[in-house]
Amino acid sequence: MEVELKELHADLQSLSQSLPDPSHHDLLRKIQLRVGDLAKLAEAAPVRRSKVEDMSAEVVDSNPYSRLMALQRMGIVDNYERIRDFSVAIVGVGGVGSVAAEMLTRCGIGRLLLYDYDKVELANMNRLFFRPDQVGMTKTDAAVQTLSDINPDVALESYTLNITTVTGFETFMSSLKNKSFRPNKQGSGVDLVLSCVDNYEARMAVNQACNELSQTWMESGVSEDAVSGHIQLLIPGETACFACAPPLVVASGVDERTLKREGVCAASLPTTMGVVAGLLVQNTLKLLLGFGQVSPYLGYNSLKDFFPTMQMKPNPQCSNVACLERQVSCLCLEFFKIVAGKLFTNYNHSLVAQF
Image (cartoon, rainbow, N blue to C red):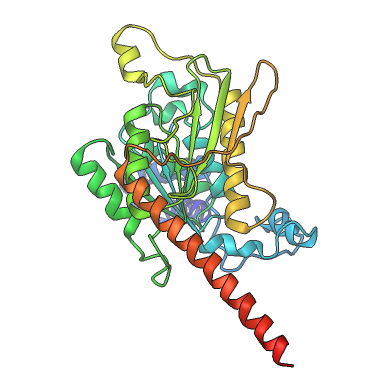
């Protein structure tokens, strides 16, 4: 566009010199000035790269995936290009969620679903993602604007809603079930849900949805004093759900909206949020691409650079009915595997005895 406008400006200049009637010169001059202004705007606008059909390991400056595909050559990942097959939903596009979305976009995730009801404020500028010129935009719209410029290969879906309301929860559930991206996918329409919300009610809503859908998800949080955080892997029926054992960092159930009404706010450090987002996405990649060990629960204490880990077993007396149903299903499946294994072993022994 920038080149075409400059060429048009040059053509107008030539035309003005060839016109016999001087009265037309003023009009042409106005058009020239306008075209010149548009050319400057086009020059200042961000240049969006064209889409890349296939990920390549070719080491050239124009290849946005060469450093990622190098993970295959170094034996870390078997097939990095599989990342384009995966869908990840991020609930909460704030300090942690927005950075996680950017990381996954740069990694070339296939499809990203974003959920948030809030708008960008100047108070958000201590985070790592949003810009001052995006103040007043919904966080989902601002995120899509930035992420689509970073990587146009990623399919982005945004939902400006509050999942703790009845209609918001229904839309959330419906969007997770949508299999248009991969029609033959087993289970729900997404591979992983990342919870990056800042209040207890929203976490419980994500927990309920994922328990009902038997959807694997990861929960994340940062403490009110901004110096500690955590991530947690939740597999319905296999690990503790959020109702079984919510992390201590958010167990108090304090909502940032309540703090604002009281004239105070939770502290926020972009460093802590960046660390938590990095841990969250690192474990997301490990889970999806099948490398390394995924942490069931990983804490972060920035004051001591301490990273505690622990196993989170499901609570057989959990208050969430859907969680109990998933626990029963997992126990039945485990029992079936044990019985099938013993039958197979006995059958092999009987065959050996015959010969």
